[in-house]
Length: 70
Image (cartoon, rainbow, N blue to C red; front, side):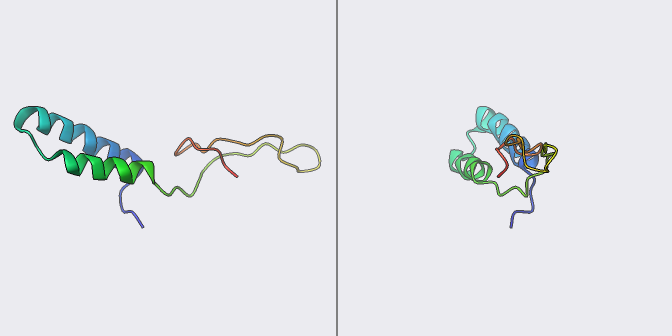
């Protein structure tokens, strides 16, 4: 389980990018954070459109992480 949201992880990377430019902070930490973002386990939040028989019309995209919902 990850206590950070994907947006918080992206914000941390943005802050560290500034630190690297200013004082050469460890790039390995940024790589680890990027890996956490890439593998972020989202519970998927979105709306699935259904036809009149309640069958999904098309795959929807998660409103939180942007991945296709299954």
